[in-house]
Image: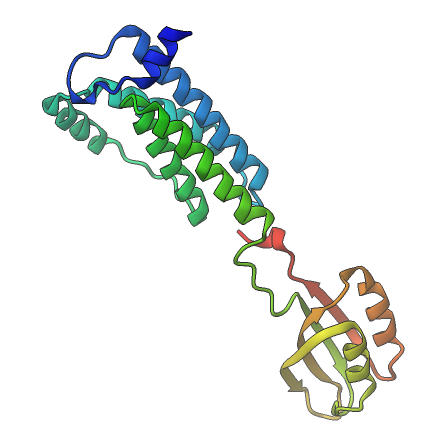
Length: 231
């Protein structure tokens, strides 16, 4: 145990050659911390763009970067050679979510810290990063939903402040905004489109039922903007 703590305390980047034990510790630590990052990503992920291979890649990136740092050591020539070799590789996978890029950078930095034997930095950095990610996820930080629904219907005649449609929307919605009204002409019904902020989405069926009771109401269509649709 004392020898393990000795390995954890050493920082050979100032000179010297990495020993087999320290290299093994770096790779194992990178693997463990990579797993922590991957699990946090798995827990906090939302949306339809989930990829199992991406989660596994977060672990592999951490270990590979740790190995790269071990190979480079203090040898500038080796570092330049590795840069040239990596420059040949063409990565054609497009990452759409900026948050996924942030996780890749987390894996890179943690792998660099573990590979350069800055174990305390790697461990503390992983813990702090994961705590920040979990805080942002559970606090729903940055969420902004002025509207959560989109309502379309056809109705004959104009809709005034005291119209039954306005009364129903005030009953179920915190706010609502008319975004378009298209008159088809020839005495036909006009097509209306509203953005809604529904107070309780569990009452959507009740909202539609109340709208159907209004005379002349046709083609009611309510679309909810769910968080899972964010890609």
